[in-house]
Image (cartoon, rainbow, N blue to C red):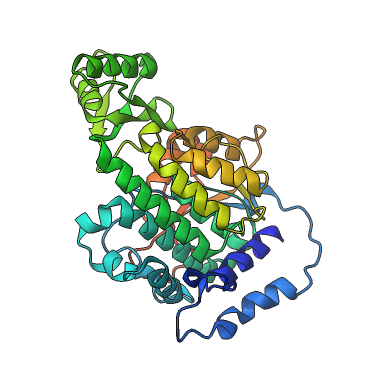
Length: 385
């Protein structure tokens, strides 16, 4: 029941049910009554009591974050109901044609923080439309959801905690503020695949000392993403990250790679972005999620609207505890079946991480493709390797 109502709530909100401010108004030419007739019926119709579903009949939705964007994303979604309306509404909120940018690029423009965060957000919720059309039971049987970084906003919109246009406007403000903060200091993010003996905290401390020797005061170098066992993303000043790459053998790092992002996200380097985001969150009517949404900051589920506002602001300067989130969602007694997991949005990164965190849960993983048009009700299931 909760998942079905959550779907109705976000689908309704996508077209600007509330008209309190201009960015939430529906795009011209869209018959909102027609668009939402089915959704309204879902909300108003009585819903019979049902027996508790066994785990194998339940589903989990995972929403990707920045870095999953690719030119052409959205092409495989345009034939499904409401998707073009989502992109038209996004054009009014953002002030530019997001669909054109997603379909045709150029890639360097799409990769900019200010563009890619809204792009991933909209593509992910458009992928939910595709999933709902092909497998409506997946939406109705959803018991939990989580999103990586900006993907958390998509998860909250899906769960009915905020409307589409309000969530997108918050993402717009967040992306602009993070872009500005990243341009203030040469910084970045380093993906590190370590080993059991790797000491990430010690490595970061020595990298900060190296920066200090170069005259960089109050250097930043710290774990910003917990992905899966022995795999972390470290963010901070570029000189610190270069030091870690050069000395990777000393810290037992098996592989390091600088990520194509503009700044040291999820560290205190993003502190200037916190206030603009919290200000806009204070203007949004955030509601209690109707489906369990797990927070990046803690890995645990959100409890109430005040909790959401607080942690979404903290998230910008706090590490993403994705590994902990996976353990929280999929923890169960031995012998208990796992739910089906769907990655809704561009890329398959979250599926790869799930495989490394919990192989048994990954065996029920599927990806909702946003690149190619498909009517296959089985979507794009992963084959266990």
